[in-house]
Length: 303
Figure 1: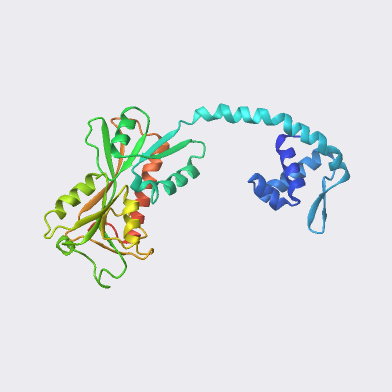
Figure 2 (figure 1 turned 135 degrees about the horizontal axis):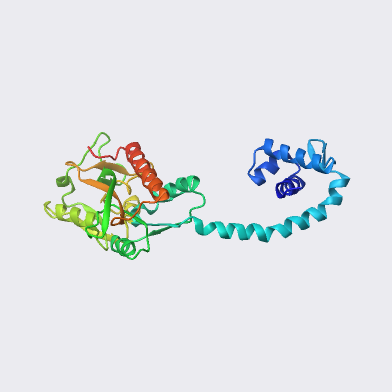
């Protein structure tokens, strides 16, 4: 008998059916049935009987069970050793991203990647752009995702998708048919800002300074997700990147782009001249497709 025979017998003993044994072992029912039949042929015994729709162990199986259990336990250390020996064969994929992308985009993309590369260990951390760049240069990360390009000569920028800056406002602030808003429409309005401005917020602040009267920043918070939460709480308006705006309408906010539009690009950052592994190449493709689809579904792509 082979280990697979013992695994199938153990699974049927636990579950009482071929279907549930297949779910436990993540095998098709046909494979479980064929393996059981093969074990019965090799032993010359019927191992299970169908009693009222449930597979019950025969007297012979119950006599064999202690030995089967011991064989299974004896083999387990060898299985663990095999798993450990295989692990170094797959190089880990170390992913860093801005906090803005940590929730709406990257977790789902990594889940999709893991289905294609299940043996590739993957880590994901959210960092400011400066820390993402440092980690890339120090070989502590393989890729970084950001809404701002990196100007360091040791980093390559790959543009994956492009959206546009959005206004978030409490429900009812915009007229029902309003499709765009101009910066001068924000004159004197109460706005939500960032405690530590990033390149996008600095660009928007410089444009808002040209509006008269200048919009008032009454509340400053740590991240764009917190900015959105403050708008949801009715504390003011906010200009945000398109990924922060994803799903905002469903949560009850008014959303519309600025006119003229201000483009926001999604970048993948990699060490200069680094070799793109198959897993990383797949992640870049997945992220490009998911980002374009996400923005298109929300009507947040650029003109």
